[in-house]
Image (cartoon, one colour):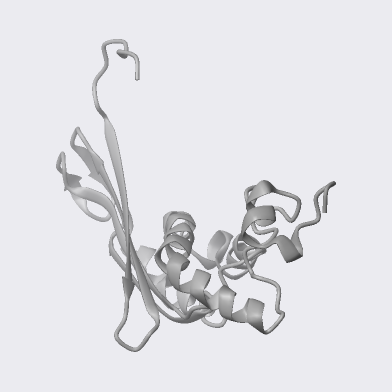
Length: 183
């Protein structure tokens, strides 16, 4: 990246997500979001928030199966700007039963958008969903091969640009489902 103009750091947001395979065969995807300021400021509920103290510290753990269906949710609002921020955490259980697939963001927003959720925690579900795909990728690849033997279309087809049914990726990996001009 080119050198930036002279500047002062005011805010840092850290988002970190880890994917785990559980011993029961399911997967835990844990994400944490932390916001800190570089200067002190007064907060109506917390008083003086010192530089480096979190203004937001929130985490979410989704337990998913191989099909990326949400089996369980744990969420915590450790630090928020207001004492009532954590009151919304139980609503995240509404994700149980949803699948991380086409329409995920829309369903999340229907369940947790606006006053039903927390903007920052809902934002954290984006990288959590991506990490769920990455964490389960090799297992889903094997699973998709098993489905191919059963004549079922792999779930990744038409899930993104690379897996468009007319893409070179599908042509090479799943030729039976390729729909390009030379199909």
